[in-house]
Image (cartoon, rainbow, N blue to C red; front, top):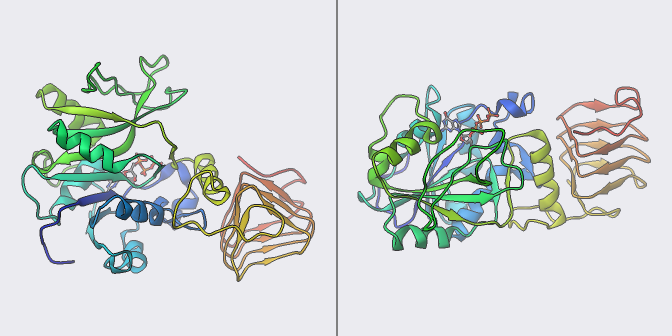
Length: 333
Ligand code: GTP
């Protein structure tokens, strides 16, 4: 654990969830470390946070906590300081924030940025921070507007942008504005969260703040946004990175001769196979003759036999795809 020092721009990255919706991919790899755009997903978030001025980051870990530090180390290679807070038993999003904040020594009203560890977004964090400061908010939530909000909790705001409610998923949402997974908290608000107990910020902390009349506001940004928590979304995000629909300094550049795709140098791809539409073929994987791989992730060491066509799929590491087990059909979600 690193020393406790003062930092102008501190953040907590929540990476401790079980990632059940992505099982079995998450059975051995936590969701934030799954390959997206050819690199562990969290790397995109770390570089983006740094570019927005964050220089001190605590990763709030729990499930498979031990895999983060060997990859990100002390943060010096990203010109930032990274430390790791471990919840022996997962404490939920609020409990995770509280536990991680103990690693940050900052003044009562100083802002702390909280990132969900499963969001790829182009939102303007600096503008969100400015908005937080100028309106002296207790909490500023990044909100985004989606076409169909039925799968999400929605967050209505009044004409001045102050949050009116946090509403659970519903069949006829009253607004299409959803919580997009990046919050700025005053440190004093984190101090109020109970220690060593499972707390959900979405279901407990935010509604309680509203009841107490705290200044909770929305920062709406309708730029690129994806929550990578489901297989289809994770695969689509990876393709968006490789095709350049979403730019990230961490993405592996396209090097496929047959389209937009990234092929690891240790992978073996037949000359006439097509790797396109943002696909990634990871280390040690093999792709046979006449294969077509579109918008997919071919996991480490996977083997794809001749003639297989795959679209929008995640081929599990070390698995084997034959014409038989994909029944000659295009595999995908
Ligand atoms: P599902 O099980 O598929 O819902 O995924 P999840 O476990 O990641 O839950 P969810 O998508 O709601 O989590 C949102 C973010 O909070 C993710 O970045 C999670 O890693 C993180 N998170 C969820 N629960 C915890 C927790 O108990 N502790 C910590 N530190 N982070 C958490």
